[in-house]
Image 1 (spheres, rainbow, N blue to C red):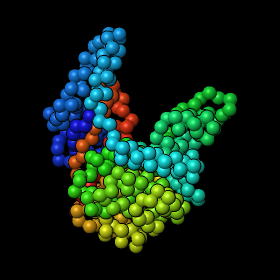
Image 2: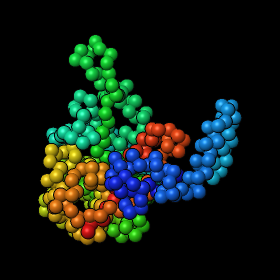
Image 3: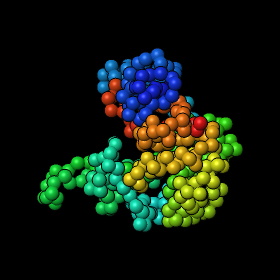
Image 4: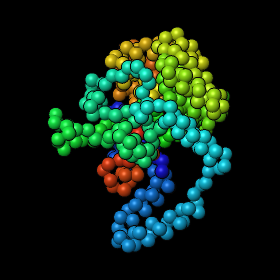
Length: 357
């Protein structure tokens, strides 16, 4: 169920633009009960059901859920054969990439830096694992890796590892969008007129996840990727050729001449954590990017928010972009009174939209 979660960096519930990820998380509970974030009829019904369901005795609750599941099955929209075929092709690409890549999906000699400040300041080589959201989207897939001894969900916090039972959950990080995130980007973040006949550029296309998804499910747009790592460029071109997808992948530095050229042709630019884990100086990168990504009207989709990555009050970055409002789904957990939001919902809150001025 989708509704509006709109706000500003002042953490007030208004309709003049999206908030940063941290502000949105703090305000979304309040928004659910205020008129500034109106609920749709579907959301109202869902909230009423959740409330009544919680009040039922266990046996009645189970019977109600069973009866409603049968009713809902009648109205569930079944995907067309064409859609099923596309989903199968994407699943095949995912399977082939898992065969091509190591479990952490890192390229040979790839340089990686742990952030020294911000939300990931506590992350380090010992307590963090690279788990690609596009390839390892299912808990069963992660279980398979764990059973094979290729990864663990926990790490030892004691210097006497092997003898100590002091363990904590390991931090998972991904350098790809999940299918759920990509669906949100193309179906909710981007309007029909922003895709039809337009060029969508994936900056740091890496495994090519966004390119495959866009080419399969949104043929009305022209997908282009730019990637600096020759290993990933070769991998993407191999997969695109094998699956006969018309996508152009450019090998080059987005901050160099190659980036300048592709930005001129792009109508939509998508950036998924391009600098945070791969450089120690994000600020310089964004300042340089601001000089090349400058075509007015260009739509910019970022994960995370620009405000969470760099100081947007810096004179060089001021008047570069304006935030554009997005429709975020309400967390199913919040609707049911659970203080912990749904993980898929949390993953969407990190996605933001801007328009280049």
